[in-house]
Image (cartoon, rainbow, N blue to C red; front, side, top):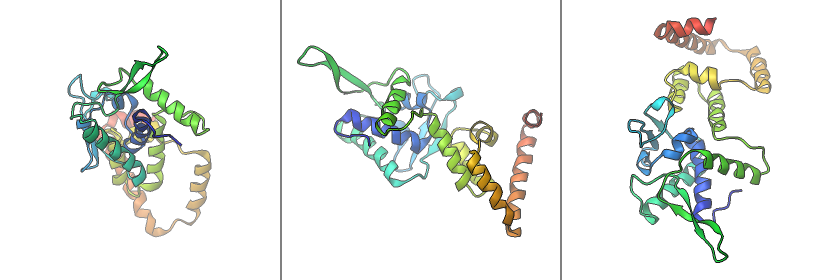
Length: 233
């Protein structure tokens, strides 16, 4: 339901799509450059080594592969990046989501007139764009970080092995899978009931997966015994 009649509106729609496609935090998105996006590889590199680069949590650098959530979402992001590179002619140092340029209209009032090749100073404009988008869709407001919760809930239904869930967790920038499970992994009550009911007919062939999960938990505790004891407490 987001209009795309102006480049500002195109930026706003691409911002929503990019947040879902990558699960990046709003502070990282506000500081991201075109050079951090590799469309061919389907990745973004959140490079926090320099103060002028991506503002990631705890200043961690990591690669995120585009989540497999649909070609329509990815297409919006790809079209936006190509627009900035081929029509705006911005290079790798250009902002991925540029700030809004303001000018004076014929009535002498300030108004948005386009985009300028500068980053937002903080993530506040991103949250404003989210609020406006949800209002337009007649939905309650969900902040950018809620998209990370969405992606973890998707992982809970899509990942079939501990290795797949670990990869999904790393894609969100989590070094430990327990961070994903404890911070984002709450199961909705309705889904909880569905899962419990489905376990009535567990087949013997599925038992090895339980063993894999148990092995993974033991490995995590071995790697960080203090963390394991703290969680047990």
